[in-house]
Length: 125
Image (tube, helix red, strand yellow):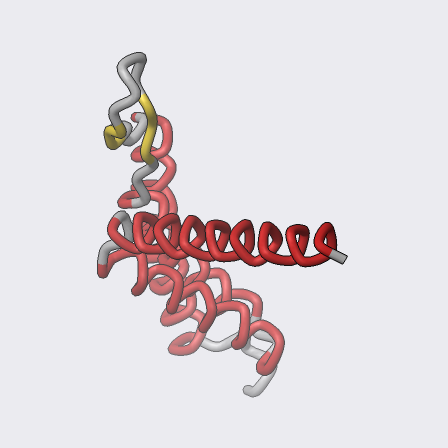
């Protein structure tokens, strides 16, 4: 009977430590997220929703491209050095170039959508 009580108290202690650890990890993660990342996630969500609701691939690609470009351009990761200190890793150049490409692609897709809307396909004439 005492073993069950000991086991239960150890389980409660272990659960409490895990929840505190998860909460501190979540707060550390939230410190690394900027307003550009929130806006990028919002634009990507709008792109996915518009793809499912309106089935217009071009405008959905515009939203997704811009949102993913914003996320890629500003998302930062933490690392641990040899001394055990936590530091923020620099953003790799390839990811910056990919983000710039996605944002420029979004603008080009937006102009293409505007051109298609103004000129039309010619089938309505």
